[in-house]
Amino acid sequence: MDVRKIVVVVEDVEVARTALQWALHNLVRYGDLITLLHVFPSLRSRSKTKSRLLRLNGFQLALSFQDICNHFPYTKVEIIVTEGDQEGRKISAMVREIGASAIVLGLHDHSFLYKLALAHNDITKSFSCRVLAIRQPPSSASGRKTRARASTTASLALDNSISMDFSQIDISGVLR
Image (tube, rainbow, N blue to C red; front, top):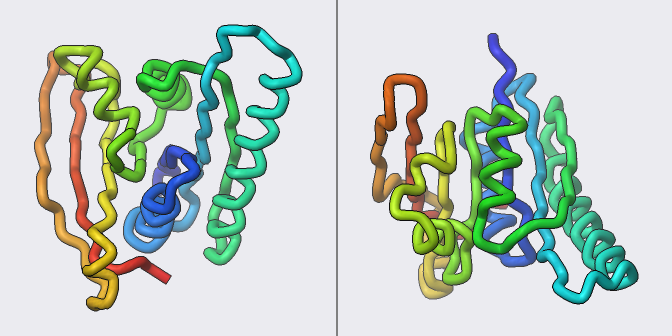
């Protein structure tokens, strides 16, 4: 069995935690490596103190995500906290550098995926792995039983060597 590298984008929004929980329940298998990736914004002022504070806050946030992973036996977790843009270029570069087989992210109104799509005509060139965007339902749906359904799936071939598989997944209720 091949070890898969799965990147989970760490953001301080509830849907990002939901995306991690979804991945742990539905995607991750024994031996897979989970990379918790947090990208904090580049500062224009170049203040080292402020940059350190952003890095520390990002690392603490990633540790809270690691705590979620600790409830699942046999999960291997690494944390990467780095500085970059908020349009997703740094995230896509890190995903390619890691050699990830999938990236899991929480889809929300300010998601980097939307910004990346607006900045580039063809975002399929940004990723060479599966992109799983988890969207949390409105709070009115939280009383229903947990279920997942794929609402959009598209495999896009670039040239014969690179492809991107994008899935948007609606979650009804929070996984516990």
